[in-house]
Length: 199
Image 1 (cartoon, helix red, strand yellow):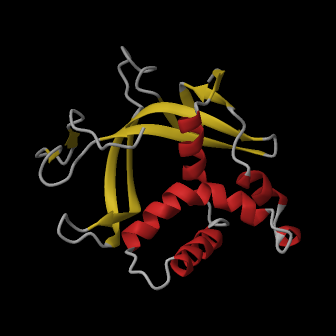
Image 2 (cartoon, one colour; image 1 turned 180 degrees about the vertical axis):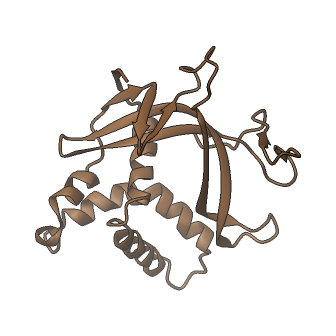
């Protein structure tokens, strides 16, 4: 579909870039290296995995380009990783519809008034989460997410490559709220309660 160019806010750019970094397999060894760096930094003090995850989420995005451009390793790092470490350009493209792998997706606003719906999103994701309020230890769990597509954004990494992201609003289906299966097996999702996504 047609696209429009817009300028990412600082928060949008940071959040989008963080998402790309944390979902890029080539970056995973650097995330693990940064966690090791944090553990050494806090040596002698008790530090929880939750605090390490928060520090990674907050500080990795600034540490990563410094590490990639370190003369000790820069000759062994791919050009793609060097471009990736710098973050996307401030200008991005916005789409209201997008075809990928034979599927057509439309933003919720684009399909307003149409008889078909292509803004629904479902995924199962391995997610870091805390078990409960009493047990604040980080665990990995496969969680189901039901969402509506709000925005389709294409990030440009200085002409080297582009990454397309789907921004969704996700229904809060924790406990018994927000999700129901009817007698025919169809899933009904209540979008009046959403998961806070930090934006």
